[in-house]
Amino acid sequence: MIKRNNNMTTDIKVQMRGGNGQAVIKNVLDKGEYKGASRLVATITLEPGCSIGAHIHENEEEIFYIIKGTATYNDNGKTETLHAGDSCVCLSGQEHSISNETENETLEVFAVILTY
Image (cartoon, rainbow, N blue to C red; front, top):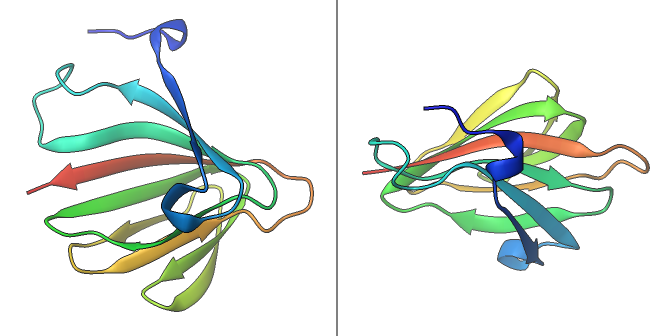
């Protein structure tokens, strides 16, 4: 199966998980287009000053891969800076958030949420 860019849907989440601004979610694959146990395969774009607020994953885990930009990542209360090419995972029972605290750089992240 091949899915072309122009066939991918985009959702805009305002103040996602209590964050600032908006997160643009581009669904790379939709549920039903693959057989694996996941609920999200997408890119997330955060413009400067935008964020996804802190939240805990239960019975699932989320993987981020930084495609472009610089992210401020909350890894269970510890703040880390992630750059293009870096990745991280939030396991079940853990908390995380991500933000773009730059002044003029778009943050683009590939995200997968795997469910149990």
